Image 1: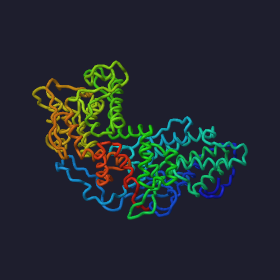
Image 2 (image 1 turned 180 degrees about the vertical axis):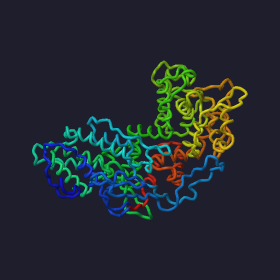
Image 3 (image 1 turned 90 degrees about the horizontal axis):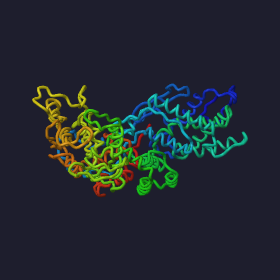
Image 4 (image 1 turned 90 degrees about the vertical axis):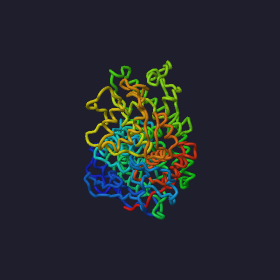
Length: 616
């Protein structure tokens, strides 16, 4: 095949015969390049769809653009730094004891747009979007290398560099889906050409339907022209079925599909309002982990998302849809480090009733607790931290000190309020932040500091594992707390561990499987702890009191808000604007702590609906 696929003129078939099925790799790569011709500039006043960007390009990094033969042909660098001052994240070092009572919004100017690095679909978003595009088609397993998890989340856009393994996986997945489509075009194409003369019209009809869904916006005239040229050339060289499959393969590898490319409108004072279609994608991938549905795309077409009120109305609709439940659970799984409950192993000698089914029940119990708080208890942050119920079944009732309910199904039951209070005392999470034989004040303390106070301590020195070590010259039995106090709070370790252990020692009543205990190694448990460097600094006795202190903390409200804000926008902590976070946190305080209002206030904010002016 000669000529440029990006050219609007139809390529001429040469020596390739329609009966042959040579490898289509070069043609598909050429299509991706044709669809990726980088034109215009981000933040330019010109209207129209986003310019194409190389699928290997990440925000703030340099990535190779690909020539038709797959070799690096050029380099594209995106500058995603926002104009103006460093936004900061409003957090303090773990050992800073300065109170944080000042209102961070007192000196805030009008809310600015948030940084908008180029966001690639996460693995979950990719799979969900492919499933939505090919609804009704039985898809193959879509294998992808694991997402990078940075600062707690897998959608941190600056960490979404496209590795060679990922690009290879995209290609293999696209080829597998294309083979299914080529074998049965009627599974995706509504028209059925019975003669060669009607194939072009059918292909155009399908392009007009499928490509805008894949790109999540209308096609530009030149984009449609390139797609039609490629389809007609492929149809001439091969046949209609193959041409449809090749289009599928090319579109699924295009940056317009793999990335959420956001241009915005005419910049004003260094900020550009996102288009309705760009906002539709932001909303949908935040609240549903997939592409916009027909109603959201229609709202975008009617410019209903051009106002904060329009965005708010659609966000409330998306939240009310059952599809939001899985997405909210995905956020909680990452924020609350539920991955720590994935592969829990415990000592059979110390915990003889422990098995895989117990571990699974504990994981599901913690999940259901959070879901109940968010969906059935008004999304209350206070309830998340202080509610004294739990989901139990016969497998885990004894861990909670309760009678077996006579059921393998998890059932909601009240627990002893002196022993259980909120997410911090869910047995599954406590077991996840523990070792095989012992509890871990360090793991539990770091979890609270990082996830609820946004004060992650620095990493430990090389070779330090956080496990309990034997104390040399010990005079007798010691509790876990005593051993940590003697080994971790001395010398160079003391600075960090003073803050970590202050939280961690408060969990001393809970053993390695999350069960309550009054003695540890035959000695009475001391669960007294302390909080430093926060607006609720002071002593407490046990995790129940800790949860109560945290429920009163403005800093905790702002940290929880920051976690949602960063997740909604795919940002790292250094890009979380303290003013916007504090303003959203006020909405949390004014809504009886309803965490759902954090989502609504976030998406209606200027930060969510705008991007900084950025030029290529």
